[in-house]
Image (cartoon, rainbow, N blue to C red; front, side):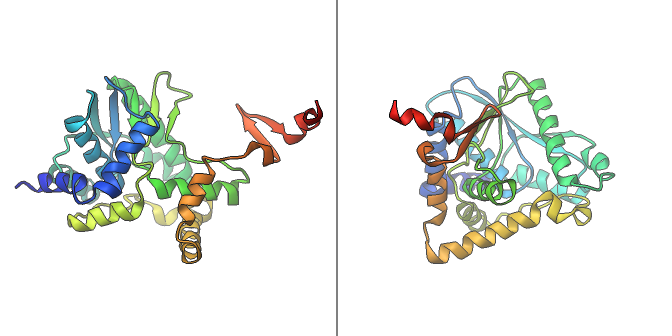
Length: 277
């Protein structure tokens, strides 16, 4: 049996509960993929995006409705060895990738403050433009359950607001384009187990100048800090991640000081006295 067929089988069979079922549940629960969608699946070269691509392929093959997918790798200026690893994995996994180049690394290399933040914004812009060129109406990214939890805590601890990474978003600047995160309910530990079971090796960070980034400014060290904090909390409460996630889906607006909608702030005092009317 071809290696990629064994890998596909492992998603459906061995990791059905941890990966496949949660992927399908997210797609259904959050209405991420619809019939006749044309989705650009973004592959960075890491474990998450490659697993996403395989899940999308399986859904096309075994799903209840038809949709199309384009598997795209943006090369922002990767070193040759990293790009070769991406190509090798795409071939191994039987994913027909399309690579397009950008000069983001060259541009960002001259930025001293928060280069990673600027890089992320520029990469997103290039991907949206490419999706439009391909006639796609959705862009799929490989963010998973743990990314959601960590981002939510980072927003609270360092952004002074309660907000989370949403399962889907309408683009504000590219009309008709939507960003979706089909691995939204899949835990990172399951992805790592799938990677180890299939003896796969993916790139982790292909940035040419990570050593020049300010870890405090770009948030990398803060995310590591939050990861460690969550692990410590799990020693006391093994369900802490689920509780954090559920809290974001169970906000009691009667017991918060203020909310923001469409950029407009509303205090609990605005209608406090209406209680007696």
